[in-house]
Image 1 (cartoon, one colour):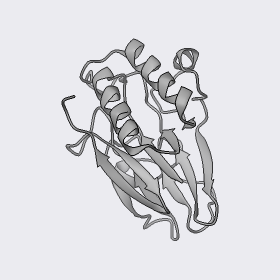
Image 2: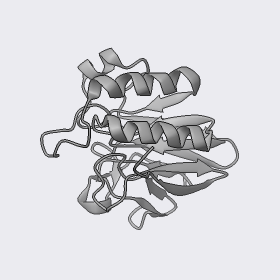
Image 3: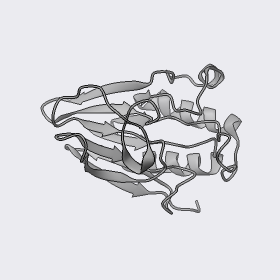
Length: 185
C-alpha cells in the first residue's frame, strides 16, 4: 500500500497545484490529508496564491480519482466541509496496512505526540502504530520518546513550512519518507 500524506495546505492554490503534481508523479493507492486545508488561520501569514475557491476543486478532483481520507485541523470548519466532496470533520481516523502497521491519522491539535511544543495526548495505541500528524509545519520521522513502541510521522507543511521546505510524505511498505515540493511548473 502506497499512501501520499499531506497537511497544512492553508488555502494556497500555488502549493496545492504542486501537491497535485506530486500525487500524479507518485501514483499512490490512497491520499491522506491531515487538516488545515482551506483557511490560512489567524496566526499565519497569507500563503502564496491564497485562494480557497481554487483549492477546493483541486482537492475534490483528487478525491474523484483516488481514495482519500481526511481529518479536521484547527483551521477547518463546517463551511469548509460544504465545499469539499470528502469527509473532513473527524478529529482522527485509523488505517491498517494489514500485517505491517496501523496508522493513527490526526491533525495534531487534539491528539499528538508532543513534538515541537504541540499537544502530547494520545489514546491507547498498539505497539508499532504510527501517529501521522500535521499542525506543527515541521517534518518528523522518528520514534516517540514519550510513547514507547509508537512511531511519529509529520509530512511537514504543503504551503507554510516552519522548517524551510514545502513538503508532503509517502508511506510505503511500512516506511515513511518526505517528498520536497518544488517551485515552478
